[in-house]
Length: 136
Image (cartoon, rainbow, N blue to C red):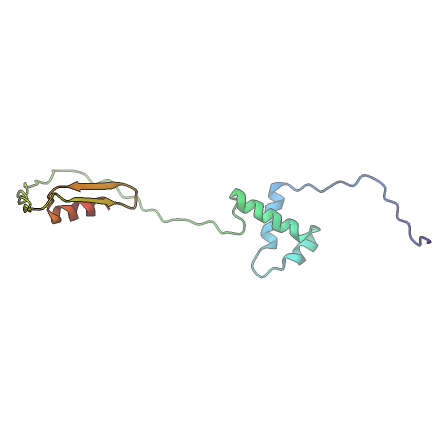
């Protein structure tokens, strides 16, 4: 078996190190809409799987790649000045609940927040509805 070509490697070839800013720039360039990742990777001199790995790491660490910044409109209004408190008229007392000859009822409601509301004994349905509505 004869060797037709012999290649001698001299010098110390090391891995290339990229700064985080260079990685972000390369990933943004490779994943723009309409761009072929393989072509960008070839032009940049890196393997396309490295670009996918960097993009995954950036997403996992919360670095937004290729997403435009978003803004929320804020309106600042001055606090209202209180000149006079409104007069609140007392409400008429609620009528006493109707008594029944059966044993006292127990109503227990579990709200989505995990809180429990337990009403025992004779309870006016309108009052129970108002309390549940206020807590929900």
